[in-house]
Picture 1 (tube, rainbow, N blue to C red):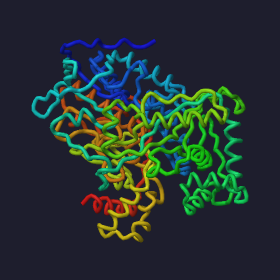
Picture 2 (picture 1 turned 30 degrees about the vertical axis):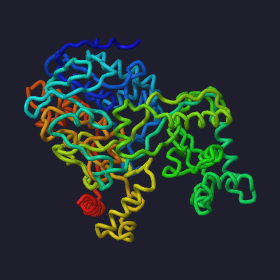
Picture 3 (picture 1 turned 90 degrees about the vertical axis):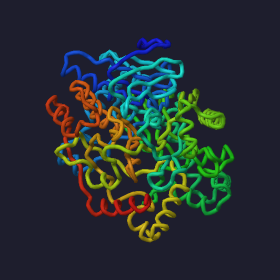
Picture 4 (picture 1 turned 180 degrees about the vertical axis):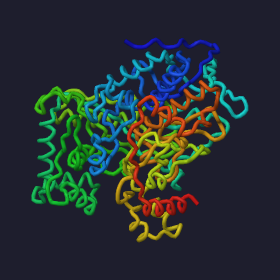
Length: 552
């Protein structure tokens, strides 16, 4: 049953905390804030979740209306797992683990319907109001502080503390005292942005059948004597013989084995471009984001009915595979437009639907909204978080709120971003050889950063009662890459929520609350996870030089 929404009228209403945007880290921050205030005052604060999307299609941003069911999880080295007796994904933030548990997640796969129900239940517990389908007209400020949000329908909602969890920091952008890096301006590429994805679900295609179809493609595409199959590879390569050879090489691993689908407990990892080649041959387009603007990538698939045997045709599969190239300006426009797919995107989805049905899918449904990976980063935060700081281990252990590990991963990037990075490196006297030697050429380091979490990169220096939680927080350099991941931002959101509860109870500003104060609360109530960030001093120093070079 859907939660009752606050009525939209030309009125003025007052709250203690307003969260603008309904991405999961922001919702969990609002819940944590309410719980912390209740712990101190024995009553819940007046809280409002305010967002642009349509709540009838669920609450939970890109994980729910965007359908992103395949969750990226924290990456913990096996040695640390064993030493610390940690689970595969480490010691996750308590609020995130609670959300996963209530959403009945086994490992990776998040059913959007269950997530919507879980989030509503958590908000209902804290007596939060929900108002969707809104647009900001202006932000009301008293001095540097936000005092209210005026909507286009005339109503004004006042509060003492504000949280922005939109992908493009839309509330923050409307606020005097906040500025923003456009696209990847933080690494010297203001016009470049990661691709967006239209996630879709299939039914009627069994895991076993998908495996068999892919395996046949793998065998045929690697068989140079199969002229018909090689013609398909050539179509997907856009007639480029060198690219065709590159595609064929990507069908086998380093040991020469075919890269078959890897099956997890509740997910599939499609490791090769075999299905992508087959789709683009069917479509008659090149498997290249820059050339085709939209590609069927070798994606991640969440199994939303993992209890079924692999031969069952009743499997619900959620595919993160259909990517569309966008510029920084286009990503911003899409974010402001409620993440609605364009006509061209929907047209491409029709081709995908037709192709998947030819493979045996009975039903193919695109998500209601796009998954927008990134749309810039705010500046003027209390303490920016850089890639070098991540490699150095993040915040000091004695003030850490958790630990997170993830690659510096440009997934969804077009080659022009990589080329742009190389060009920036050359212009700043980081020659190509040094660029490659330091690992910046392939954007991978010896080990992914494993870093301790704080909240200072999400607090605004000149707007004392505003926090920005999510991929648009105050990341600089390569930090915006791990900084996109929901699990990490839920850890930050938990800290921001507790900080908001502290600030509200003590009549303070949220940007005055330290990591240590939040940590002390977490420790006292028994939700402080293990802390195990690691320092890679050499790589951190090299990346620090590089990050300063490309933004200078």
